[in-house]
Picture (cartoon, rainbow, N blue to C red):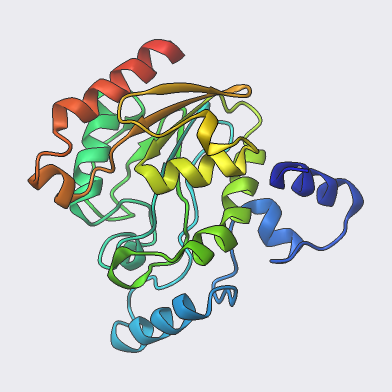
Length: 233
């Protein structure tokens, strides 16, 4: 049985899920989610140092009725972990939101803060791991543990048609959440896969490191979303 099937069975039966039925079905961990001890310790240390920051599992951004879901890796320390909105406040967000605005998946002006009035249009954004990891590197067990929330986010989007995975880890966790073997849909930048009823598109992550080293150029990134825009209509 896939994770999504377990979520749907939990919804039907009313049985509590591992992370709490309400939180799991909403795809949003509790603010003090205890599931990953290393991430809890890191979260608490940042809360003590920067008490005005969000410092909690970052919820998805956008309408659950959207047809497009973008899946990143994890909140950045001074980005989403600080602001509470995915990809907000760091370089990756500068490139992502500029691209979404260009292709009609966002409206307004991105000003790198959650109260800038930016809205998404037919698009939702989430992460494979909801809590900020030390050095931006979640452990495999943390990715696996947090996948239940990614699965719940996917299951809660009734009109979902397309997913864009930003980076190999996001791709692999998304594929597992969909109940598909990674070997059947290997990651490659610019590649499109059929993952059951979902069209899955891959892109290198839009991190500063990838753009500074030339692994990903803005043109390469825009080309992915141009194709998604054309396919969604």
